[in-house]
Structure formats: structure tokens, C-alpha cells
Image: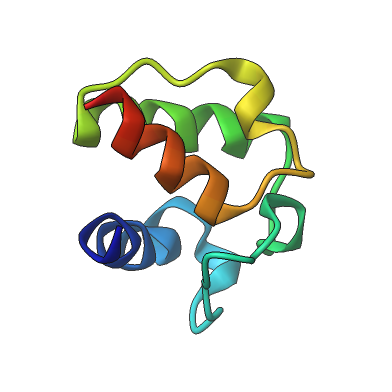
Length: 78
């Protein structure tokens, strides 16, 4: 889980330029990430799928999900 969290933390500023310096924790809601919207959620989904080699269900990336829930899904999909 720590490795996935680190990878996501490193990608956040590139995926969400307005989130530079934003602290991402497992309990961070996706909606709380600065600039989170439907377009950036698609970019985040593509990043996750390419980086972790998993298919991310669209409903997982609805704003009410947390980073931890995304990481848990990635871990189960391995």
C-alpha cells in the first residue's frame, strides 16, 4: 500500500497542477483534490491503469471515494 501511495503522491502535481503541495493521505477524498472534476478523473483513471496494470471501475473514481479505497482496489486486482 505504501508503494502505491508514494506513486500516487508523486503523480498528483502533474495530474492536478493546482494541487502542488497538496498532502494526499489514504483518507483523502478524491473530491478534496484541487481541480478534481470529470475530466481530471479520466486522466487519473488512465494514469492508474497504465501505472498499475489494472482496470479501474468508473464508480470507484466518483468523488466520494478515498485514495485508500483506490489503493485497496489496486492491491486486490494484482
